[in-house]
Image 1: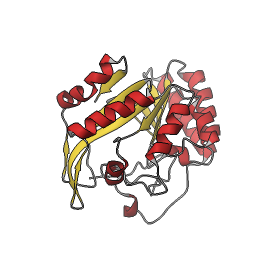
Image 2 (image 1 turned 60 degrees about the horizontal axis):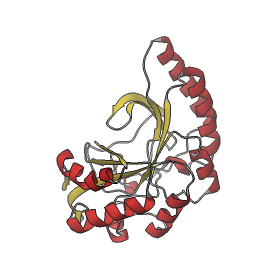
Image 3 (image 1 turned 60 degrees about the vertical axis):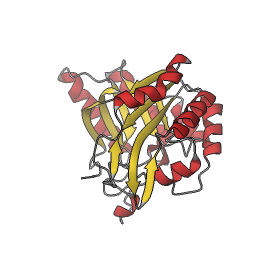
Image 4 (image 1 turned 135 degrees about the vertical axis):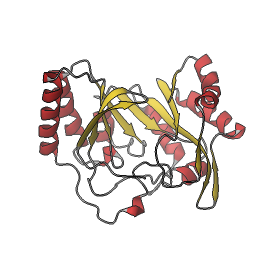
Length: 256
């Protein structure tokens, strides 16, 4: 069953890609706010929630994060990353830049070896304040689920004006190392056939990744409940074949 994160700070949890991760949710606790409406989102579809709610209060966030890090430090817990994700697109928070700066300060105080990660769908990368904020982030993880905009519209269902060409342009011009993250899946949703694993899809995706030339690539498949129940998981072995060419070209690739 899909569900929202009901706290600003959650975890820590064992992340498939990032290790021991403390989650930070900047979005409302009772609704989802996102520029995508992904058919595989563990939080459900945007239209499932009527109340918009409020973004996380910056002062409350800082207090809760400090208390959590202090407790973890006192109890001798380990922490690999603090990850901004949650109920939608974290970079939509109007105070995203100042929140990132204060998080860096707390990280340096309590867990200086811990990374700060942001999971983003890259739709806000053109904003100067978002780009500035992400320059403070250790793991900038930007989503592209296909090299074809038509496939992206079927899988990610962008909610506003969306241009894959513009997203790619913004990625290439972003002067900060980052990862591209891709979800591979197949099946049907709302009567539409979904498959971003065909030879045509994979060949075009590989070319796009090489064009963008990110620091690394993270590929994964369904691991939790999805809004569309007719989607199928892709095996790690199959995904390994998708990134084989990229590995040979010298890109860092991880499979989860």
